[in-house]
Length: 227
Image 1 (cartoon, rainbow, N blue to C red):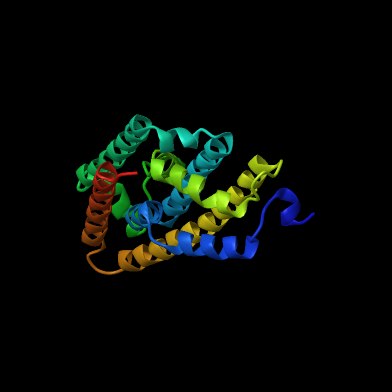
Image 2: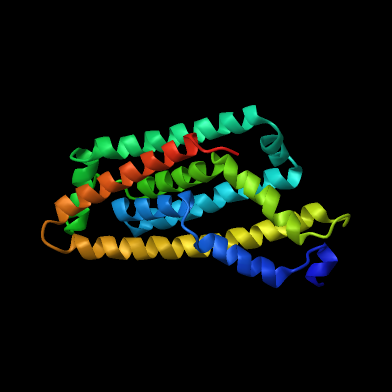
């Protein structure tokens, strides 16, 4: 079986373009960096996997033709956009308010190697996963991107257009997951290095403030974006 038998053409060009798009810093990558820098590489990796899940939702909606609704309806686009913006801003404000509180104290103890039975552990990773999924799923521009980008590599009139759309979407999403996980590991490694230095508690607090401010800025940017 060849890509052409599925109605896919220009696969090498698609792979190159998808790689460049995935390497370009955007809201998803910045969210992963902020999560990993503020909470550690584990949460960062789970945030990256969550972004991949949100992307799967957009692929499914686009293959079913529902993403066309966002492209055609200004109201539908605005509703999803404002929900996504509110979620990002709420996440950022929550992180800013947590600095100096119990959550920050747990992070400080973890940074200096002190065991704490109250550490969120897997609960924190799960929270990062679903936050990443929501951040991507509630960004209507991702749906419009798939709707505009993927059909360029699908033969017009082919019987298996929906299958080709899903296949290209999965390839794009796999590449994005690899990039975002790599970014999470790099940001987490930088955080671990800073955590071992003097004044790591202050550094951790400032990283959390920076991440919170970043998420608020992403929310504001999404709120004022247009189709």
